Image 1: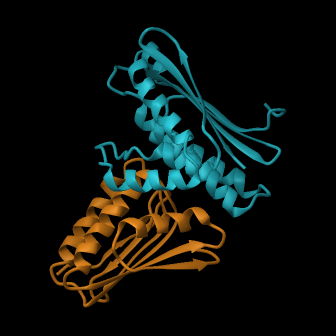
Image 2: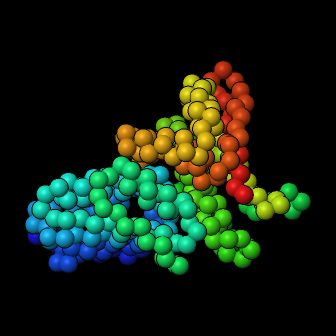
Length: 128
Length: 171
């Protein structure tokens, strides 16, 4: 079974909390590393491992202030893995948080919604 | 400098450390500015993409001689006038790459907001990420977030080299 994955936020990377016991996954902060592959690989690997014995329901909370285009591709890959999981043994839900008036982050959520077949809930908050 | 309302300018090699410093300085400077969080975020976001473009696209397969350092150096200038932020970058580029880039920028500039959204989504879905971590989405993202046409120029330096200038406005 996958173990809990917890990473503190840094100036260029978000905090990560992936919990296999509750099926709750969270990315929070900003994601602007020059090369995001290095940062996202362990996250993608974790999902592969989690997918072997997932919870019935999996929720991912995306609470990003902003992310660069290098991260956007890695986040898409993460969603693709969750999309496959959703078709199998776990019901996956995405909660996409964005700050009031932040059309860019709202649109970014809509971009993924247009590409990925997962239920997205758009949640507007005062501050992330 | 003061008359042109320059907030920050830099000329030199774009390293990961420099990138982190410039972003941190800009963030601190913008904190005290009377701007909406929305505008601040846009400026920061566009700046990240512009700087990372410079960082990734400067060829680094040469030995650092004085000449090659000059060739790899880039210019960055951030200014604000009448409520409009301008991010200017300048860097050397191979002539061959310049014509590809010019074509891409012309395509981007021919699109409206909705067109850019579709172009971004298609590119995001189809693009392959390079080993450098680039996905070829930077310019589309810059154009989308800025909401203005990209102002650019290629100055021919010699038979092999061109100098690429990009001006991005955020209002």
